[in-house]
Image (tube, rainbow, N blue to C red; front, side, top):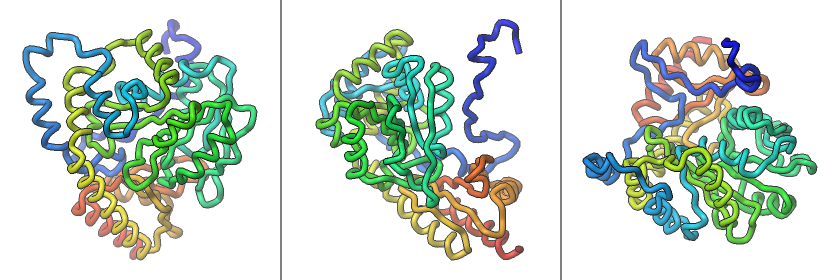
Amino acid sequence: MSRFWSDTVRNILPYVPGEQPQDKKYIKLNTNENPYPPSPKVIEAIRKEIGSDLRLYPDPEASLLKEALAGFYRVKPGEVFVGNGSDEILAFCFPAFFNPGDVITFPDITYSFYPVYAELFGIRYETTALNSDFTVDLGSFPEHADGILLANPNAPTGIAVGLNEIEVLLQRNSNKLVIVDEAYVDFGAESAVPLVKDYDNLLIVQTFSKSRALAGLRIGFAIGNRDLIEALDRVKNSFNSYTLDRVAIRAATEAVNDKEYFAEITGRIIKTREETAKRLVSLGFNVLPSRTNFLFVSHDRLSGMELYSMLKNDGILVRHFNRKGIENYLRITIGTEEEMEALVERLSCYVKSV
């Protein structure tokens, strides 16, 4: 600890990303990466973009990408914001929409970056408990809160709420901004993007890391009315006007345009998820209903830490959260069919041994 540290740095508890060990080769099912490569059209676009033009700054507006996203989601380019991953956009939301002393609210079991951002930007937060079945009680958010942050589907549970429920939430909280983090929405949930035209208190945040297999390029986007997008632009241009590089813009644009590949890959992951869930249930696992590219599971005779440790020892990484309420659960990313077969085989052996 340096004597030059600020009070914020001294007191904050940073977000902890999933393990990236280098000691040996693992089957990596712990960070919700897509098991399949990006679209071949994306790879070709990257090759074409790497050349002498890299000496030039990228388009600060990323207009090409915004237009592609606007076409895909049937909104206007002015209703789209793009940034260096959805995490950056979520971070921008705090200074863009809330003042020090404001209160935001989100579920107590959700993406663990939310409280980190709140502490970093000096925004107070209050959490609400999930129901006993891990579903979100949308009626439990405190009335005095100035904003609501909702991951849908939720992480790490994988459970989604429906579009009608989101609309009721927006109507009930018409004077509050509702930010819906849809990082996993493409794996079977309903996106709230169609509601943007009717609700000026809705902002959708999505990522290219999961369903479009571009975690390594760090690309995210938000969709909302023009005034919300302008606020994000103001924060971005007060921080870094060039948040997306030339390669990322071109690659993301091709990923959006290749609708067939997008549908094929997400469909394949959904199919593997459902098949894996059935097999785990047959082994006695408790498997929450998932609309993501991961499963949240537990077993009555083996603790979460035991299962995590045994799998890691056997070369399979999954995510274990050592916190009250979910300490006996594992979050398991959906990998290839071969990777999931290896996982189920190991888990079967563990269950038979107890």
